[in-house]
Length: 99
Image (cartoon, rainbow, N blue to C red):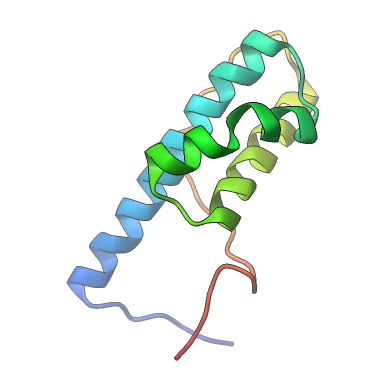
């Protein structure tokens, strides 16, 4: 188990990443709602390059944003979902690295 104790600057960077991730989720959510389709492959094709360029997120975080939105829309496509800017990001071994 590992506990992060970031400096104030690192904390701000984490918050910035979290906000950009959730902003990307909101932008992807608009596309999914218009498409009325929660298929990850179709949504990925329609949003990946644009959202990655605009958000500045890593490729895997952009893919996770697409996945999060698609999973949320599989429950109900009839309402437009909105993600809170302070919503959590699930980090996995492909996102984090330790040096």
